Image 1 (tube, one colour):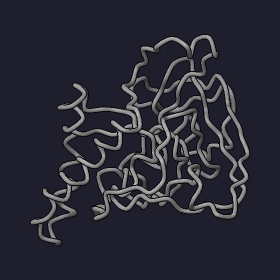
Image 2 (image 1 turned 180 degrees about the vertical axis):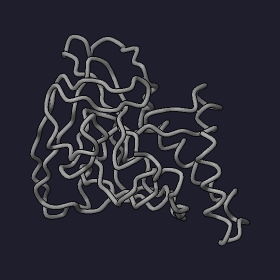
Image 3 (image 1 turned 90 degrees about the vertical axis):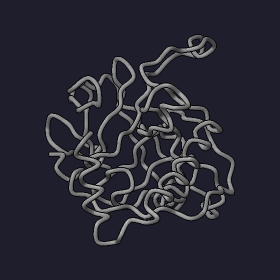
Image 4 (image 1 turned 30 degrees about the horizontal axis):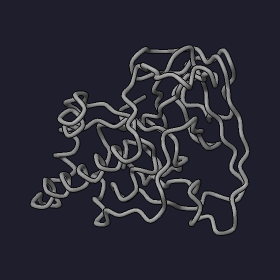
Length: 228
């Protein structure tokens, strides 16, 4: 089911490092209807999932959905200037087999040696808006009426979308619980720290790919991914 990850094409490195709109922190997020999730029933559109279905997670195998949060958002006409404008993720940018959109506050799990150097863990969760400019990811309209669905679990999980993109699903908590610090299973970076990391990743990737011949890029990328 995941052979696409080892066959993906090399993703372009964006030249722009700036972002014009204010960043948002990782929130409850939501997956746009039509996004495929790895489940015990195969790759299913997120809107077709139900409580009790099992979804493949990054660290804990198949986990049962305990709650489904659904929301409809009406976007303004000047959508590109709205902080809630979805982020467009080109094919292969984050191991996704097809182009897709994610909400700016959706947590995305990324892996980087730079994260390990700075945070002590190579895997960190960043808000999708912090990824702007990385491998062609940018804000783009996905429609005026957005149907969002987010499966929830008994504990924080990371789930597979469209082959290999890793999306963070936070366990719902009450207002009283939110007043105290939470020790989650995943390191969730605040927006400024997340943006600093992604900027460093853009620069680092540009440095290492600058002298790679075009014909060997795909081979190098496939070898790199297969080692993980």
